[in-house]
Structure formats: C-alpha cells, structure tokens
Image (cartoon, rainbow over all chains, first blue to last red; front, top):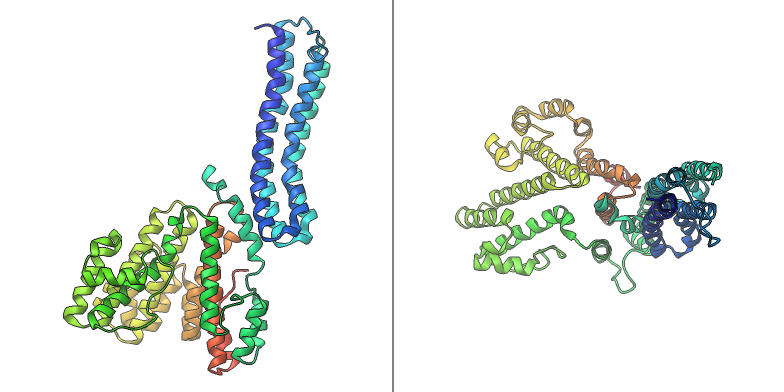
Length: 156
Length: 324
C-alpha cells in the first residue's frame, strides 16, 4: 500500500472507531434518559446533558481526521506524495483517538446511565452526577492531544 | 453485556418511580393518622388507587398491586424472569381450586388474579383432573395433593404438600436463573420459609416427619439440623440460626413472635437492597416489584391495625423495613 492509503486509513479509523463508541454511549444514555423523561418530563434538560457527554469522542475523531486529511492535502484536492513510512506514521498518530475514543465513549455511556439514575432520584445532585461521566472524558482528551501533536509533528 | 443493557430504559424509568415509593418517613405519617378513614384519605392523596377505585382498603391495595404489574408488563417483553415471583400466587390458586373441588363448595374471591393460569382455569383443570395442562413443576403435586385430600380429608397435609412444591419450584427457578437477584431471592425465600416452618412446628409440637414433609432443601440451611433443633425447643432453633447467615432471625425470635415475622420480610428486603445502586440488568425491576409488595403489605398491616384500634406500639412492631 502506498503512504497516502495508510494515512487515509488512519483518518478513517479515527472517525469510525471514535464515532462507533460515541454512538453506543449516546444511545445507551439516551435509553436511560427516555426512561426518566417518561416518568418526569421536567428532567429533560438535565438528562439531555448527561446523554450528550459520550458524544464528544466522535467529534474528537472527526477533528483528528480533518487534521490528518488536511496534512496529506486531500482536503485541498492536491494529495501529497507520501512515502509508506510517512503514511504509517500518520496512521499510528490517528490510533490513540481511534482506540481510546471507542473504549472511553462506551464507558462514559454506562457512567452517564448511572448518573441519569442519580438525577432521576435526586435532581438537586445534578452537578455531582455530571462529574462522574466527565471524569472519563479526561482520557479521551489525552488521546486527542497526542493524536493532534503527533500528526502535526510528522513532516510531509 | 447486551443482555445487561436491554433493561437500560426500564431501569431508568423504575429509578424515577422509586421516588414515589413509601419511605420510613411516609410510613410514620401514615401511622400518625388516627383512623382507617384518615389513612385511606392519606393514601388517596399520595396517588394510591384510581379516581374510580372505591374508598376501601382492599380495593385500593388490589389496584396498587395491579398497577405494579401493569408497569412491569409495559417495561419487560420476556416476563419469564418474573415467574419466580408469581409462583406463590400460582400455587395458592392450585390449593384453592383443589379445596373448592374436593369440598364441592363455591366460595367467592378465593383466587389471586393476575397469575399465569387464572383461578377459573385452575378450577377447570382440577375439576377435569387434567393435570397435564399444568406446568411440569405443578402437575405431579397437583394430582398427589388432590388425591390425598380426597382420600384423607386432611387439609393441612394438602397444604404442606403444595407449599413445599411451591418452595421447591422457587428454588429450582432460582438455581436456573441467570440473574443474581433471582438466585438470592429464591435462596432467601426458601430459607426463611423453612425457618418459619421450624418455628411454627416447634410451637405446635409437630413431629420430625411433618417438618421433613414441609421443608424444602436450600444451600444456606441444613433442614435436617433445623428440624432436629425445632424438636429440641425454641432455644435450640435460636442456637442453630445464630451459626448461620440468618442470625438476625435468632435475635428476632428472642424478642417476640411479631418481631420474627417482621424479620422474615425484612430479610427479603435486605437481599434486594443492593439493587438500588444497580443501573443495569433486570435486578432493579425485580427489586421494585418486591419493594412494592412489601410496601402494600406494610400499608395493609397499618390499615388493619387502625381498623381494629390496636395500640400504636403493637402496629409499629409489625411495620416492615422499607426499600427506599
């Protein structure tokens, strides 16, 4: 495979895996949110925020993919002539957000479900409830940071 | 994990509904009502019953029980997981049908509604002696109990045969269950029932043979040792229980008979309490049904106490622990 194919595969992996994780996380938290809103529609705003938290990984994956595509010139319509080594480097740089995005979004979704349970019973504890899934976000941000730094550091 | 997640919506909805379960504080408010009428008014204000439910205890409590099962049926597609909870009602209907047929009498309201086999169908099965229409765990004992009652006219013997079959069915269902809460519930239910049998047998001086016929085996109790202890006396039962996980039962026995009855129900609530923190699996749903049953039972105790003008202390002693 040529370098550009590896680089494109990396960008695709970032979007696909981080997006899959977010879809699962937002989906499962959405089920829980719907359960609470069925009984108490007044809690809609609070549970919606908790449902959206696992959605950020998908955005991070998209961001990394944009940077990677921009780096290899695909966005401008003039793809760079990449060596296999450079392509593999870009592919490797995309992996942190791809893998951590997938895993963290799933776990964040489950944590959001648990926090929605807190809001269902004690809505005044919303602030504390939001912190639990937000903690999981830390690791997605770390992965995003490394992916961005790595892609930017690769000479093309 | 997929099976864990299939109850996410249902558990969240149950979490929201748990807010309206009666806490100890609400039970105290109900206790503070002076008459049964005031209690019924209080319950009505809390949303118990419907607009068209007559203002009497039985109607309100029956409606509340129906509401619980309506909610669960709405939330869960595969109701088989709740079978274990309905076995006591199912076996009660069998007992009632056998007695109705063998005594050739017709008594109103003897069947519990909302069971897998309705009271009327059960009556028809027993009348036609077509026991093969019953589930496998019921058909054998149904025929045996029917013939025993017909030939001996010993109602108590018929009762213990069916009660033991009910306990065995619960225990077997628990063993087969994938969900931990069903396993724990089955184990606790059978063990507590065995302890109750031992205590009552001791008080009525029943034989070892009788206890063996009535008790169902379970993992957490040695029924042989328990029934021998019952033969020796109440102290021996307490001593035996003190060395098991049911040591609380020994303490309650020392206190009073009603404290012991109370402990028996509290033990089940203790078994399900961890589900209050579980966001996934069917556990919180099962726990909700049991918590509602416990709540209805507690309200029934208070209403009966108020109706019969029992002293407050006497009612308080019988009030069960609440789930929330």
